[in-house]
Image (cartoon, rainbow, N blue to C red; front, side, top):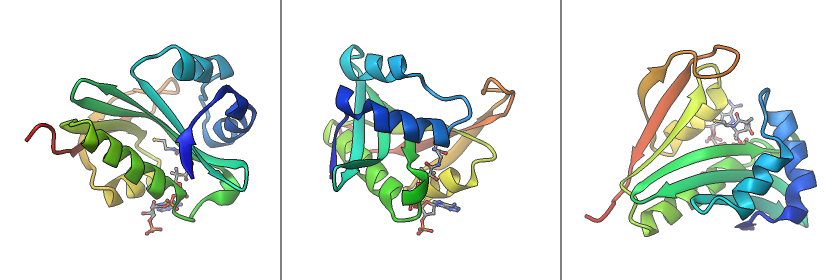
Length: 147
Ligand SMILES: CC(C)(COP(=O)(O)OP(=O)(O)OC[C@H]1O[C@@H](n2cnc3c(N)ncnc32)[C@H](O)[C@@H]1OP(=O)(O)O)[C@@H](O)C(=O)NCCC(=O)NCCS
């Protein structure tokens, strides 16, 4: 089940976050995203009462951006990220967004494969985008918008 992230999820969310990312968000970052940032949407994938994955995205007028995506290590390769991405794409389509974009580390082959499977294209490289100096791939998917 995909549902809204709540403060009660944050212990489990932080576990996934820490195992998934080198430069990870802090608990306060998630608190801000779920309670204060009006542009932010934070969702979790829950199964049998356990949070197994999460996704965050902003919608600013007709422009949408993925802010985070991670799946618990033990739950990977079961289609959870694909389900989360399909959900986000559907929500953005419903809200008449024209474009959905994201940045991903150039070395993150698993995520790049996933995004290509979801219909994203590589647009350009953002040199030294991450704190450790790694480049980001900027990827985009065109949506229906108001057409
Ligand atoms: C990237 C990530 C979210 C994928 O989650 P997942 O639930 O295992 O992915 P899915 O099972 O839904 O896989 C969907 C597709 O993604 C691609 N994929 C996922 N893991 C992959 C891997 N290890 N190697 C290659 N392709 C992979 C495949 O195209 C796969 O489709 P397929 O099963 O038909 O081959 C997960 O590995 C993760 O949390 N990584 C750490 C955090 C991260 O990198 N987030 C993205 C930040 S931009």
